[in-house]
View 1 (cartoon, rainbow, N blue to C red):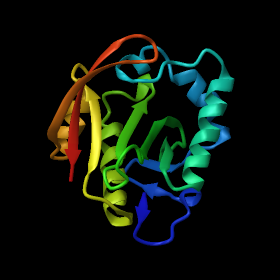
View 2 (view 1 turned 90 degrees about the vertical axis):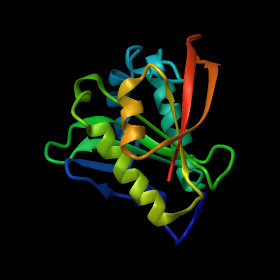
View 3 (view 1 turned 30 degrees about the vertical axis):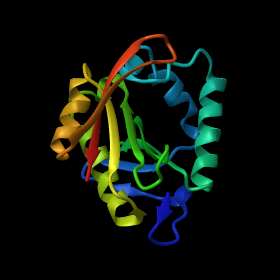
View 4 (view 1 turned 30 degrees about the horizontal axis):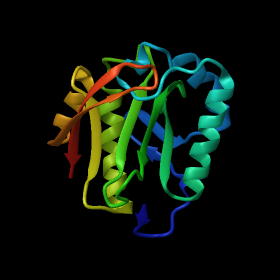
Length: 179
C-alpha cells in the first residue's frame, strides 16, 4: 500500500463509537484461537485452527505485513469493557491501489452491528491515509450480514466467482467495490 504520509502500522489506533481497532499482537493468540471456530469460518477462505501455533504463525505473518505496510491487521475490542470482539484488516492483494477488506467477529458479537462499525471506521481511515482507487470487499453470497455491510457502505458489485476454501467448502463470492 502506498501511504499519504509516514505511518507506523504497529501503533495505529482507530476509535469508533463503541469499538477500538488496534494492531493484532501475540497477546491476542488465545482469544483468536478460542473464537475462530468452524462456525465463524463458514463463509471464509481460511479454516479454523487445529492448534494455537497456527494462530501464532498468522499473527507473526500479520506483524511482518504491517512492518512492510502491505497489510493492516487489527483486533476489534469493545471500547468500554476491552473485550475482544474479532479481527479486521486491509490487505494489499494484487493491486495496491485496490486493497481488500476483511473482517470476522466472534459469535456472541454477531447481530450487534460491530462489523458495520469496524469496517466503516476502517474505510474512513483508509481513505484518509492510503493512496487508493477504491477498496475491495469480497463476501460469500450466503453471508447476509457481510452483504448488508457492503450495501450500507454503498458498495457496488464488480464481480462474482467461486473458489474452494481451505476446508474444502465452495465459496460463492460477490466482490464489492467500496469508494
